[in-house]
Amino acid sequence: MIIPRKALHRRTVLRGMLGTALALPVLEAMSPTAKAADAAAAARKRFQVIYTPNGYIMQNFRPADLGTNYTISPILKPMEPFRDKFAVIGGVDHVQAEALGDGAGDHARCCGTFLTGVHVHKSDSVLGNGISADQVVAREFGKITQMPSLEIGLEQPSLVGSCDSGYSCAYTNTMSWTGPATPLPITLNPREVFERLFGDGDGVDAKTRLAALRRQASLLDFVAEDAKRLSGDLGAGDKKKIDEYLTAVRDIESRIQKAELHGAEASLPAMARPSAIPDSYSEYARMMIDLQVLAFQADLTRVITFMVAREGSPHSYPETGVPDGHHPLSHHGNDVDKMNRLTRINTYHWEQIAYYFKRMSETKEGDKSLLDSTLVLAGASLADPNRHDHRDLGIIVGGGLIKGGYHARANNVPMTNLLLSMMDVLGVHQDKLGDSTGRLDGLLTGMA
Image 1 (cartoon, helix red, strand yellow):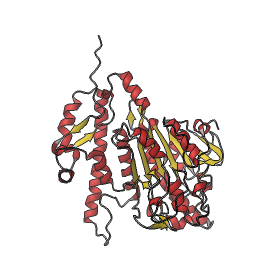
Image 2 (cartoon, helix red, strand yellow):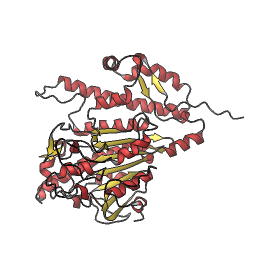
Image 3 (cartoon, one colour):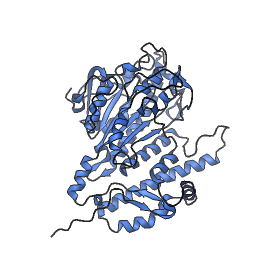
Image 4 (cartoon, rainbow, N blue to C red):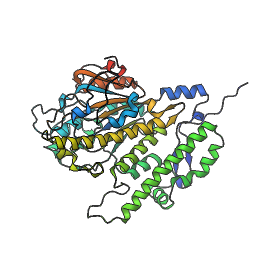
């Protein structure tokens, strides 16, 4: 007679001193049978949106040919190792980001409408938008996860007043909206993200607990005994998964601590940068990406939006050899040298997105990877930034929930049509979103 193993509860955590608690990755032992574990993994779906600001040099983003044998473009070159895991989708527009009588303000409108398809209200104090696609999904997925969604960014937002020609800063600060007047703020400090994910616990107030954690070097010191106890009851596969997971948690915690130490020692101007944010943009981006991977791995959330910079960002990237600010350079006036420099910045952003695909594809969940259960939308809400063009946007759809490896085009339809089809793939049906006029199911199967 085969006796089914006793299953761990899917919300099992490692507990330690001072009320510390560390979420676990999804383990085989959280299902009573291997068959049930496979079924649970197959049913688990995730949604990731990655936003890059200020548009692209489109002839360097959009592949010249359609189909599966397309030649990858210069900007997308970092994504070539994952070619079979994404599709380049052309011919989708955001007409609602155009002026439509409201004058200047394209950066605010394009970011505000990216996931909503709503023409946002022009005011520096009164907001008007719609619910964003990620939050439609989060309403459903959040019923079974600790956090409905995470909103992550890499650039300090402007908090009040107008950020673009009379539009509220809310429109350029985030792409996630739970309703017409409720934007969700991004978190940009890795320490804050880490503590949201792993600072949970009870018995001691949060301030005391977190102060103790910072003094004691590592969260893992507090839960080591419980990890040892639990590991003795697990199979070889789960033991290996926990070991890899705890190693990843410790690695990123150590990187945050090093950034904090550097920040404390650095000679800073009067307005100091937040602690735990590395000076290197790529180091910062990858730290935040690793935190997102951990959040998915522990099934703390299944919906994340990630802004690699704020829309209208003047940020410069000396790592690329380009000293110019991003936004000023995006108004290149068709100057070839400026266009080449902007392409380098565009490509650099896609190097970070490629790192996300790498980390998700190498992080295992059963016999598959996290990427296999994730639907990814990545790109910009401007096409040619020099003209503030909102038609034929530069985007990809990727992950393991759709067919990849091709370049396809729609017939200049609202991007919200694509978003509705993506939500269908995730099992979240919505009749309409913003200015949608239908669906684009064929594009997600390579048939259109």
